[in-house]
Image 1 (cartoon, one colour):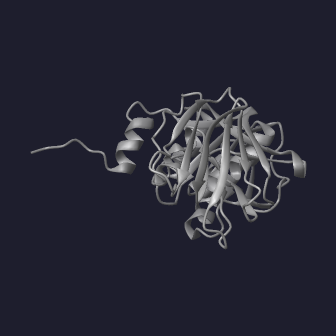
Image 2: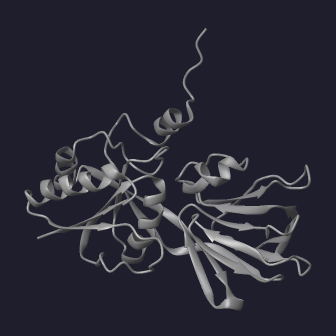
Image 3: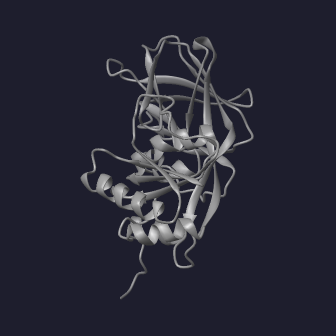
Length: 279
């Protein structure tokens, strides 16, 4: 019997009832089903296993990002059903759970491989992983964050800013876009570096290959500052800390429903309201 795990955002009232409906529909198709609320703090939720066929998450992109870390750890495909706002990573939530169960049973979805970014902090012997972005932010008591940026050990820029976003192509439609970055096709093998409120007109977003190593080195004159992974995992770092960023060893298996009329660009037009111009 194949196993499907359903995660739901406990804050979304509709998500729990839909999760229960989907579980019933999947059990009627002879799946073993486990239903679990998303959690933000635990590294291991104790739900996924290597033999899990598919994980489904009901919520918004925030719920998807939290669940993605679990799916990444166990190399399990993750399908999102959107009950949030933008929903770049998830499918529409207005499809019946019986129809979703049929899609899962007939495997009418395809797997896209999405890169994770890894941030290594050797001074703390720790690493953070993100599907969307790694962000460094100034201390609220400080006016600026002074940061040197190295690409493959070559100094590229010395930023004076409120912070810096380093995003994957998947994350280019999230915080990086709000900070002035470009939208990137998810098939591009690259990272984008976007300064936040830079105190210089020549500090612009920069795209590098994801095969390159990025190093951020905080100036010793800074106060402590913060690093955040996908908006929920945050660490306070001392001045002078070096952060090495690179493509993570593994990828996320993102499950997308097969639909000829729905793709990255149609979703982008819909979410960003980039319709055709008419007179």
